[in-house]
Image 1: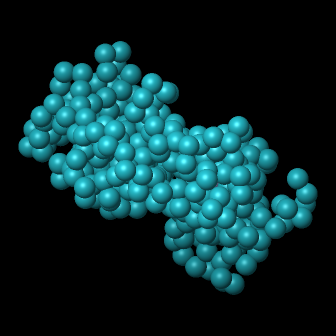
Image 2: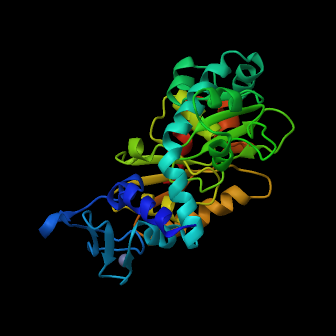
Length: 323
Ligand SMILES: [Zn+2]
C-alpha cells in the first residue's frame, strides 16, 4: 500500500464524521474550532478527548493517546494498521453500495414466496414491519449481475464480501436485514444459519432510535426484535448474539438513566441466561439498571410470540424481572 493511498484516505474521511458514526458527541467547543468530549477509548467521566477537525487529529488528556483517523480506528477496534485501512476504505465506498444491495433484496422478497413463507413461520407477517426493518431476500445468482449494471466493479463487490472469489453471490437463500455497515443474512435452507459481511457487527441495532427510551429491551437476534416490534414494543434493540462488543457495551453505559431488560434465549445449555447474568453484573458496575428476563419453557422472544404469546403476557414477564 502506497503512502499516497494512505494520505488520500486520511483526507477523504473526516475524523469528526467517523466519530459521529460511532455515536460520539462533542460536549463543548474550544478555541480554533476544536471540540472536547468523553474519550471513546477509555471509560471517561470528564471530557478529556480533544478533536481538531481542521487538522483531522485527536488527543486524549486522560489516556494520553492521539493521532489521525487511522490511528483512532486501530485503537478503537483494536486492529492492526492494515486492517484499519481496509475498514476505512470499505466504509468510504460501502454506504451507497449497501443501500443498493438492500433495495434490490427488498424487491426480491416479494418475488419469492418461499421467503415470505419463512418470515411467516418466524411470526413476521405485518407488511409495515417488513418495510420498516427493510427486510429482504437474497435468492442468490442475481445480485452480482444487477450491481454491475449499476456500475460497480466485480472487485468492489468481492472486497465488500458480497461476491465470492469464484464470482458467485455470497448471500444465497437468505432473509436479509441491513445493518448500519453490514448485512445480516439468515439461511432459509441447510446452509450455515447466520452470515455477515467481513468486518464487525457494529453497534446495537437501531441505537439512535431507542437510546432516549427510559426502558430498553435488549434481545439476541433480529427475528426477536421483529416480533416485538410487531407486538407493539418499539423500545427494542438487538446485540446480534448474546455477547456485546466493546462499542455496544459503551452505548448502554453512555450515562443516560435507563433500565435495560436482558431478554436472551432460554436455551437448554443455559448460554443465553449465563450471558445475561454476566452482562447485568457488568452493567450494574457502570451504574446501569439491568434486569435479566426469564422466558418460560426454553423460549426465545421469537418463539414466545410464534407460539401464541401476546403483548400483555410479555409485559408481565418484564414486570416479573423487576421483582
Ligand atoms: Zn482516553
